[in-house]
Amino acid sequence: MGELTPGQLEARYRDWPPRSWYATRGRRRILVGVGAGSAGLIWVSAIVCYYLAPSLTAMWTTFALTGAASVIYVVVYSALVGATRGVVGLAERHLDERQSRERQKIQANAHRGTTVTLVVLGVLLLSLAVPRGETAVQIPAAAIVMLVFGVIATHVILPTLMAGWQMSDPPPDDEDDPDDGDGRDDEDQDGRSGGAPGRSGDGQPIDGKTAT
Amino acid sequence: MSAEDVYNRISVLRAERGVSRKDLAAALGVHYQTIGYLERGQYSPSLFLALRIAEYFEVPVEIVFSLRPFPRLGSEVK
Image (tube, rainbow over all chains, first blue to last red):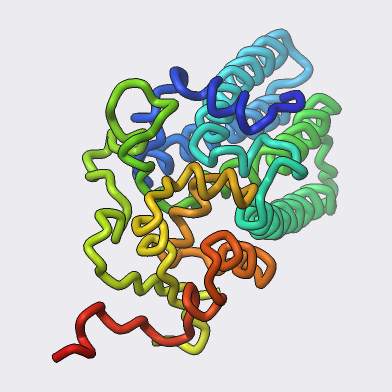
């Protein structure tokens, strides 16, 4: 995605994907599951290549799975950019300190995830490469290519998925949201009422508990 | 209360002054959801942002933020 500004992001994600897709943590996690599934398709195509390549079946299966994975991921990515309001997708200079810190945390976790993936993959490949008795295992080039592609895809996708998984429900917007135009709270589609705590001006204390 | 809890009354000040979250966010140069996270106590601001919030409301920073819960209004009148 190119250089999106926060204003463009708000405008672009007002209509599609529908907020009901990511309004609640449960729905966001379903999205993340679908996104993880799209990365999984790449790994499946590597396995298909391992067993069937070189063959037309392997080639077309790989094309079909990769194509499906790309389409699914684009949709999931779009929804998660909207859900995270730019923590995923916006250039760093457009993020405020909370968003920036959130992104750093997500990237650190995703980095750990990629490390684990690489270690597991390395152990798997080593166990395949070590000859058992007289038999040496041959890995088709297509499978290695798809494996590398799978690792790269996982590395790229993981931060987005982590962001969607970890994100807590955003606070309700102001009731008089000027850019909404529909008279409803933006985040209300999950049935929560709008209105910030203490917003009514009734003098109630705000005891925002914050763990740093 | 854990050792790192920070309490704030941004929403009281905001309601008192009739400032919307979006207006406050625009004045501070942060995302409007960040104001919501601050008010809900799910995010502790940097010292810089805390000072800017206090400056915006023209009050000392300890009026806005505290390490102890703020007393309920009227609780000292009894």
